[in-house]
Picture 1 (cartoon, helix red, strand yellow):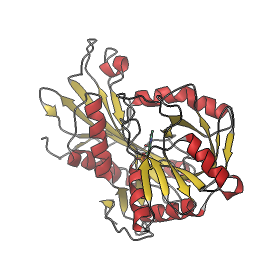
Picture 2 (picture 1 turned 45 degrees about the vertical axis):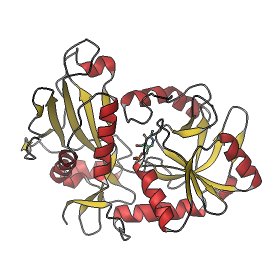
Picture 3 (picture 1 turned 135 degrees about the vertical axis):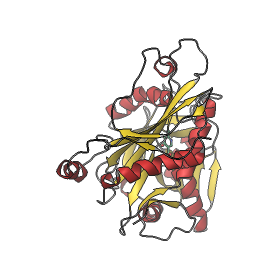
Picture 4 (picture 1 turned 90 degrees about the vertical axis):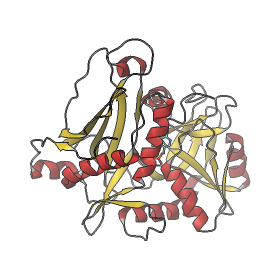
Length: 363
Ligand SMILES: Cc1ncc(COP(=O)(O)O)c(C=O)c1O
């Protein structure tokens, strides 16, 4: 394995005044910090010396395999600023492990977990001033990998590049914890059996954009996908996992059926719910069950979860034929208290009983 010593080429940094102006209202995904990490891999020599470079364009041959066959995978994670000044990440090794699962599915090279975490640490350290300190703000980190061989044959590329870029971020959905509306996609699928649904690869998101615009046209912020074989069994949202909450406090969430992303927020919430003594059912869940449950009063809350959206209460599911509406019952109490607990751990205002916080830069 390559050494973990990074070479550093320092950028002409933006002025403190320019940075502060951006941090005052960063939105989501609009601005990037001064540096990035780049690590080249070749089949012959493995991972090369990791580099910290000024943020900017990367060299790209028009025949580069990612441009033709879409061999690309990515992760989404955040660095948080604690009150004592420490900069921390939430379960970064889980992101590394998931990137490697995606790599296996997309025939890209796996990256050693410690190299992935070191790359994230390196970037957060050099661009530490870009980690915002406002309420619900963080530094969104985007590690990704592309196939980068100049070759048009259809086979796994023998050269790849792993990069990490960072973007100061406010909430993904504006308006605080305002419940969102979601749209059921009945014409398009996100994934099918044996496909790439469980991988975090760019193609899955390209395919979700059309249904996402249909959702927007129906006044909804996100699109819900069902299993393409049943058109009823719930998979997940375009960029989040989904939970229903029963009146007795039981959480119900689609099982990892090979089509959905193994969300780190999902996994963490399952643990936190179990810590509270709540039952959690990971199983097939259908739109029919959701509809009947709300009508009968046995399903009382629904929420979406993911790194970007944290926990977002769902007010209604709209379909072409009917709407399932929680009305003013959303956001529900379990949704809100799980959100409070998880964000408390991430921002350091609550105890971290499972050791999920990894200090990247000491206070
Ligand atoms: C399709 C999809 N599902 C679920 C998630 C939630 O995953 P995580 O909680 O690891 O961010 C994401 C976000 O990354 C996503 O893009």
